[in-house]
Length: 209
Image 1: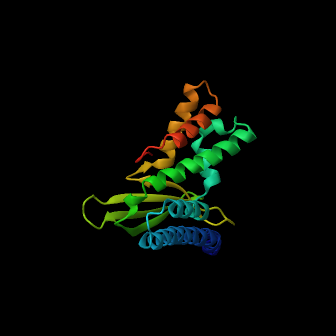
Image 2: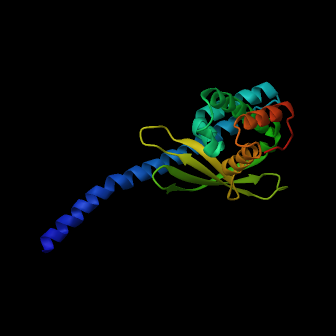
């Protein structure tokens, strides 16, 4: 009996070990992704000349390199994504990305003077890793801000940022709620969201979200 119990325990340990090792690898990869992204931005900020085209190119590169824009785009439209035509999905994806990039560029000066400190990284289920950190104003004019990077870590694929939570407020969930409200207000027509994105591009607002 004792021997059978020992064998069962050994089998269980051997079975769990690869899962634990994989989880640890996901956490490490997600943390490294965020660290590299922050380092890239700090390098750019150190030589920033207030050139809008250069800032736009940098943000576009960051989105391409570190963010899962396809998953973010789909999620941001909520359940209405499935009902959209292929043409509508393509147009919305392009507009959504342009709006996001423009919003960041218009508020780019707010990134100056911020120092980032990495905190813990924790696996969240089998797909996500939460990488935590803190932004501190080096001039001490604003309070420190806690941020969680929700990193998508799928087996066989490079990790990508899926969402950013600032003081536990999800930017992506907030955007999704706004988008869904626009569509519902217009009788479920996905084109209403496309038109709303076009309007935001035509009438940009500083400090918009």
